[in-house]
Length: 188
Image (cartoon, rainbow, N blue to C red; front, side, top):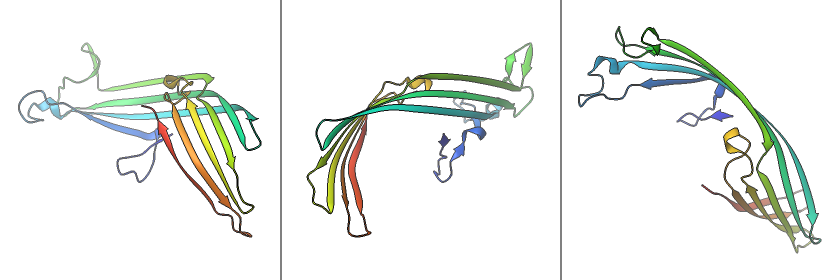
């Protein structure tokens, strides 16, 4: 998994995420008028996500040119991560700290990990070959993804989606153009 920065130019790996949290305005005065509003919390996060999927599928020919398929993915996902947070005080003493007032700390670390296994999002697909000439072929494809995987455990998307395609391919000697036109609709 990668996150894209605002510029969209380069992916940012999950193993090196940096966040800076600033203070919210505490009064009607401009931000920073109260000296502790200038404090910043820097957080460095290191995360790792691993996903393994094995998909069982079956296809049945309804006619010579039409078949239906079902794909059932078995998914194992593991996530581990750690973070280090540091209060960067603008002045000393600061009211911002980790821990409790008897033992205030400007630095805190945390780590967590977990894994889940189960059925992912099941796919049902219908393919149809249309009557074609010897050089040109046409087909239709409809694909429905059902939200059967647990979204909270990264086993599925958590919403249904539908994809439909019109497919055309041709053969002219060694030249074989191919085109797909369609749409993909996801529920919200």
